Amino acid sequence: MSLPTLAPIPELYVSYESAQKLKAEAGNLPSWDMTPRQICDLELLMNGGFNPLKGFMSEADYDSVVSTMRTASGALFPIPITLDVNEKFAESIEPGQDIALRDQEGVILAILSVTDKWLPNKALEAEKVFGADDLAHPAVNYLHNQAGRVYLGGPVTGIQQPVHYDFKGRRDTPNELRAFFRKMGWRKVVAFQTRNPLHRAHQELTFRAAREAQANLLIHPVVGMTKPGDVDHFTRVRCYEAVLDKYPQSTTTMSLLNLAMRMAGPREAVWHGIIRKNHGCTHFIVGRDHAGPGKNSAGQDFYGPYDAQTLFAEHAAEIGIEMVDFKHMVYVQEKAQYYPANEVPENTTVLDISGTELRRRLREGIDIPEWFSFPEVVAELRRTSPARAKQGFTVFFTGLSGSGKSTIANALMVKLMEMGGRPVTLLDGDVVRKHLSSELGFSKEHRDINIKRIGYVASEISKNGGIAICAPIAPYTATRRAVREMIEAFGAFIEVHVATSIEECERRDRKGLYKLAREGKIKEFTGISDPYEAPTKAELVVDTEGMDVDHCAHQVILKLESLGLIRG
Image (cartoon, rainbow, N blue to C red; front, side, top):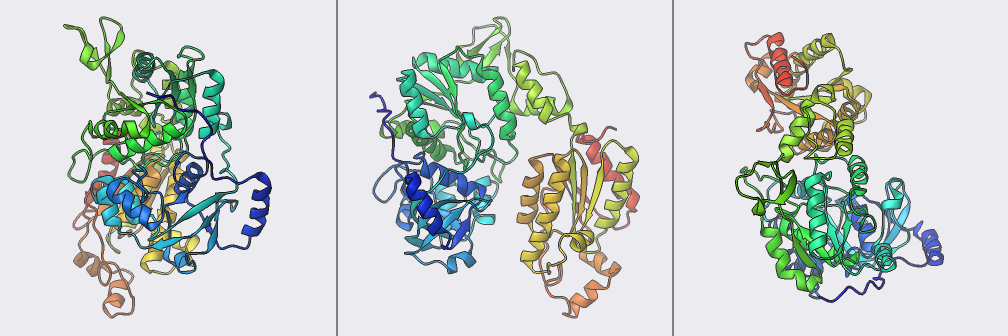
């Protein structure tokens, strides 16, 4: 295979002088404040990581990529890179206009010359790119419930790189890595993509892959956006740094990749290959179920274990990068070393710890053996994910108005405070409206904003080791899911569906709200003129009909004990 030239690849940045001039002019342009995911995409567009793309895809490129994995000109590119915006902003923009793209602090990063504006068929995008229009897939959920409805496309003029205050010395553009490989005389480089901490099996696997390819090794972890629930990148990078000196010196380097993963399995693997080729690599390790998001709504894996390897192999020559199969490494007790699973000597004992088992051991404070991971890595993981009984968590009650949520929440709060050990905060719907959301009405949009504010506060409480108890109506599935994802980044989320019937809630009608709703004096009232989407997978369901409050609160306590969140 021919060596990559390691010559610089095209970037979309203009010179410093032009950038200063453009920045001044861009002050008068309409501007779009980018989301963290859009900033990840923009950074890799500008620095050449997404080469040959010259900006956000046009409608023709998008349609072609969705259906054929190629741009309109025929270049292989499996993932659509588009700028999604809300309808209100889209109405103010026409093709032919320039817009300033800003980060969340308002700093202008680039100018987009809009050539296309369109309403995408998101169901088709989900079906083609992710294999199914199934909300259990994090990227499909993002597409339908978080991304803007309108897409903008057009070339990008880069003014400055997004600012990163963390691990600056570990972040390299494609051209910086190419220059490093040139300087070191590295002709062959194997890239290892990871979004998890590295344990001994990974070290064995990567070391073996580099040796077999007679290549140097680039550990290239993703620190942009990974799967909801993954270990945060600060912890992961500290774990990677702890492992780096286990590799022979001057054979291995590590660089952080600010990529927003889509968890698109086979297509994602090809995309990762293109990105690594742009960074000057010659080989790429593709794992079993590479970038798979887990289970679909039917409880099956989204992708087959080897689908990614098959698709990658079909396109490897065109990408210009060789695939290295990820070998599943297991520890052989008698030999006290790792072997590929298919090369284990006969009559020996294989030891392995799955990701689920590792999480259980961390959660319950159980010993993690040294053959499995490095003590430095385990110490780092224990620091950021202490045993469950010491972590913060959120109990989220949902149910109709008058179902008894607030009453049970109050009883639960008192019981938890009686136990002591962690601060407890009750975020009741009415109280939050008074202090955080007094300007909001009761439209669907405003109710969503209110629930997300509650979720945000609860996530901060959970992150800092406290207990948050929330008791809003929260009628919509998508909003509850968004809150779950926000909180599960920091601690456990326990959804409690207070499933009291509407007849019983109406019979109680303490505040007289149902009567007013029936008379049409309250518009959009949940359960009467507006739907309540009952949870299908709540951690606990309680019905207050014929049950006293103390019993219901005790059910929650028992659930928390069974999950290891409080000590029995």
